[in-house]
Length: 114
Image (cartoon, rainbow, N blue to C red; front, side, top):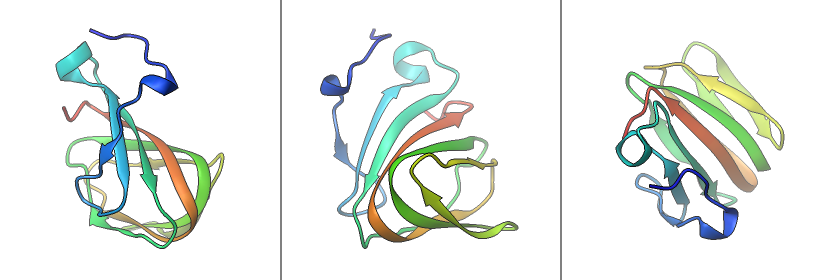
C-alpha cells in the first residue's frame, strides 16, 4: 500500500470518457482506505469533455497548467487557467470545452468513488 507517490511513479492511462486524454488515480478507498479519490487528468488542446456528473461526490479541481472553459448547470460558463480552483458539487452536470492550451488538472472526488 503506497502512501507517498512521486511524480515519476505516476502511472498514466487512457481517460475512460475522452479519447486522446490521459488520467491517473493515485489515492483511492480501495487501495489506501482514503475517503476521497485523488488523481490527475490531462486534456489536449482542442479536445472537450462532454456533460457528466460525479453522482454523490463533490469534484474539487486545481488547474496545474493550460487554459479551457468549464460550464456547470446553474452556474454558467467560466474560464479555467493555471492556479484556478473549482468546486463542482455532487450531482451537478458540467463539461470542459474550448481547451485552448493543453490542460492538466489535479482532482479530488469526495466521498471516494473507487
